[in-house]
Length: 326
Image 1 (spheres, rainbow, N blue to C red):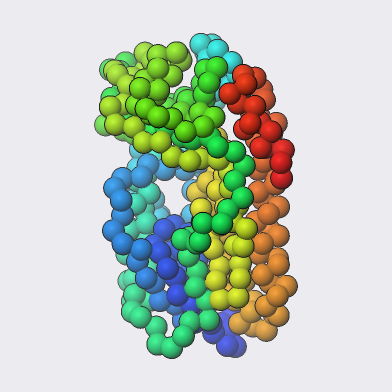
Image 2: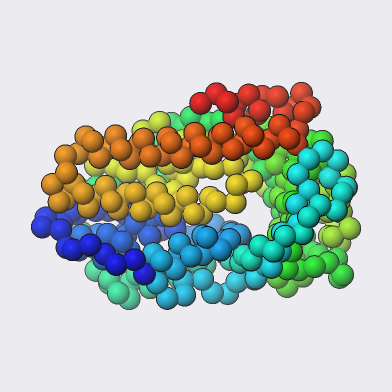
């Protein structure tokens, strides 16, 4: 685990509003630095939430939390990628160790660890907090596009490789298949806009791709979620810091969403601690927003490089242009 700096001469009083990975990590780090922290739950988790964590993200989790924060996971060994039109080619199978975990259960596990070491953090703090840290900010984002992610679970074919994640393209979408263990897989498809009938569209995309033989059938239950990169216009303000997806969201293609959420927790911790030890507030807020904006622009530059390699149809033109409008 990262060694905490010395206890601040004047500790801050902080409310952590939410129990996602970013909020809990910020609470953990602030408590280790001697600040007064209380955690307010955002309510019960909304069911299983599969997360694919690559090795750098796992290393970051271990560095921040110590011990073995990830358990009850399914391990993957390879990733096979066909990035480009007509996803019928075999592509390259690359060694890429990763784990698939239930994000809700991981957050529950981390909250349990935090409550054992810092039981007072689950109690309401007296007085008015100096800071509120949350991923649930007001809906004021700059969003780079309209694309949506279709997602659903389905059974793997009996002869399918349960240790390899697969990424392929069709003319309309990229599709990612993540084995979950127990003979099941998560199928995701990124499309250039919202879908009126998500399950029907995902079934058609699957049939048009090289992934069709890997599953016994298409997912029966499918959700459609906005998934374009987005950045909050005011992620930092006096007394409030946004973290996680509330502050910044990357395209799922990057595979770094969880790592980015953890980095926002590190940034929020540094901001609170620096103000408590005497750094003026205004430069800290400016630095917070600038760091997120720089990360966002770098991410859009990556999208602007990768997406035109795979999609040239008019349906994707708006999304390609949105990658440059930053």
